[in-house]
Structures are given as C-alpha cells and as structure tokens.
Amino acid sequence: MDSESPTSQAGVPLLHADDGVRIERLSSVLPYQPGMALQIGDVIETAGGFALIDFDDDNYVALRQNTRIQLGSIRLFLGEVFAHITQVMERGGGQVTTDELSASVTGTEYSVRRTPLSSRSGVDNTAVIVRKGTVRCEGRGDRRWPAVSLTDNRIFRVEGKQVPRPPQYVDAQAETAWADRAVQRLLVRRGSGVRPSFGITVPLGSPPRGGRPAPPPPSGHQTGDRQSTPPASTTYPQGR
Image (cartoon, rainbow, N blue to C red; front, side, top):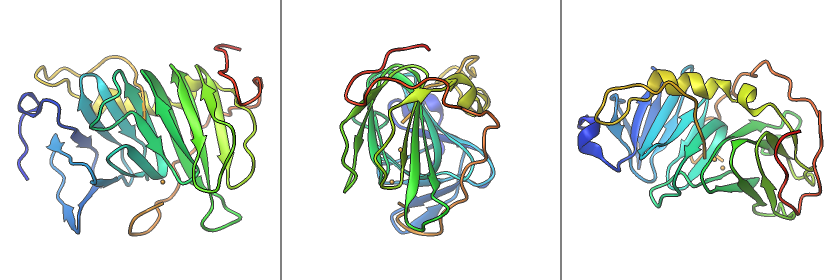
C-alpha cells in the first residue's frame, strides 16, 4: 500500500499508530505504514500501544491499547476510543456504536469504553464520557430505554441488559487524559508537520473475527458517584 504525504490525502482518513497495530481489509491483513490511508470497512486493532485516525479538518479519533474498531460509522468491539469531532462527516466519526448502544454527536469531545462483563460471557458493559459538547445515547437491539442526552462532565453506563442508571458526574478531562497523550504524540497536522499542543475530542459493537482483546487498563482515576443528574429523558446540565 502506498504511503503518500498527508498533503496529498486531503479528506481521506489516515492512520498513525504505535507498534503492534493490526489492519484488516476484507480477508487480508495489511502491513502498517505511518500515515496510511484507510477505507470504510477496515478493522483496526491495537495491542500494547495507541493509534490515531485523522479524518481531516480537525476531526480525529484516538484508540487506547487493546482496542478493536471497524470504520464506517465507528463500531467499537472492545476497548476505548476518544473522538474529537468538529464536523459530522459522511466518511465517519459522527456516530459510535456498540451492541449495547449508539452514541451520536454534533461537535463534541467524548469517549466510549466497552469492557467484558466478567460474570457472563457474551454480555458487555459500555460507558460514554463527555468532555465537551452533547452526545445522544440510544439503546440497540433488545436493549430499549428512553434516549439520553449527555453534556460536559457526564458519564452514562450501560451494564449488560440492566436498565441504565441516570448519568452521573465525572471529571472527564482526567478520565480521558490518555487520549491527550496519544494525540500529542501521534497526530501530525496535514501539510504542516506540526503536532498539536492541545487535547482531543471522540466516536464506538462485537468482533467480526478473531479473539477478543483484553480490556483497556484502568485510568487510575475513580469516577465516583459525586453527583447524579435528572431523569434520562432530558438533556443534562453542565458542571456539578
């Protein structure tokens, strides 16, 4: 696969990653090249390092260690992604889905995290954390509950097939600090070669093939239930 300069790839999602990243396209596994162009349907899986997909126009998605996704709208099989979305684009990034929920955005920074439910195989937990903006979460499949709109510093958890609790307060900056480190180290501005000096924004299903990666390592920050919010049929206010 050709590895063209970022300037010649305007509008095409480009991949920047640490060692161990795996790219699947149709029935083939592709060798990683820095800045390689991605296509809808590609599956990207990280191992011990991070990856970043640059969708151009200041839209990008960071992948934590041990994360597996598929491009289109972003489908998260396992792990964690952080999306920085300044535009909702047809080529991807405006919606993240898992088996448990779909998260749709309009200009925002947010994380979606999916981990196995240890007590039951085939059932997983999904959490959405909003750093900035608004994310609308809706149930998928047989998981039906009123749509929930999240704003800054809110976390919404869906645990297996249980009815979700209302969103709660979280220090979103601290919870998603891993993404800032990944973006600052991996993202190169197209045509400039300049790495950003600021944080990020983000977009998320079951693996099509292969084994399930291990869940991402804990952040070391306890979210706590420091403040609950109004019922799940409303948009939740910012701040504490």
